[in-house]
Length: 283
Image 1: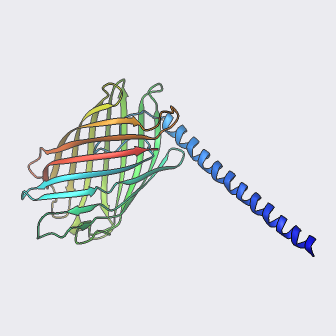
Image 2: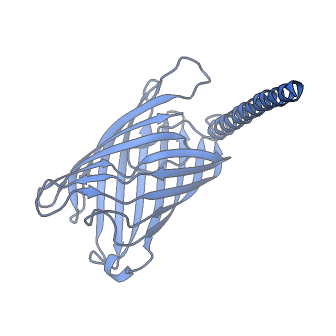
Image 3: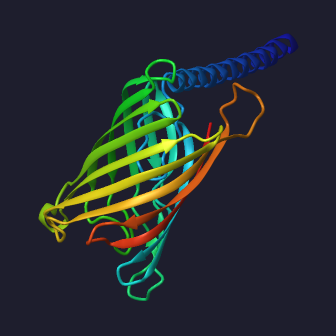
């Protein structure tokens, strides 16, 4: 009987040890496979800084948060904490998945209630790319889905989908990126309207980490309460990209910070002189 019990205990110990070893190997294989995929994807595109406002034409893996400080046309200060940014992942080769957390909107006026904005998610696929030694360009398509989850009218009144194309071309230290996309609500189209967004940015790398930039951020309204109107901002900014957080050359952990000011150049604008601050940690 003692032998039987000893054999059972031995089997359990050995079995648990083998199971734990197998789980550790599987976990290690998953992480190393993910790391290799991210490294391969990023190495095949330019190493430009992600712009302050304009969508990035390549694929990134990082954690991002923004803070917006806006003055409306009635001189009311609105703060937006998060700006609908969050976690960007590379789950597949040349593919990016963004999980964007709802921002918190503070109006600083008794007429509007503070609260959370909408939850959104983005799927991006890079069609073509070449790093600085192989053409220095990138072209991607993406689809943003935004749910009407905001509280107290701090979000959209309808679920929306926004397909966008983003492209860029570099010339040594200089690069130009552009994006065009349209936001389409799933219902209440005539009361909400559609929008077309067109963003452009020119960046120039100074030394290793400084990326001064100049953006134009344009929105064109179709149907809805602002039908036929357009809103255009000129946005000078600066990105500091990348500050390595570990000394190892192969380690991608790095900090990027920056900001800009959106200056309205169109007669119609919902706000003006908006300050945008952004921080990202790539991994």
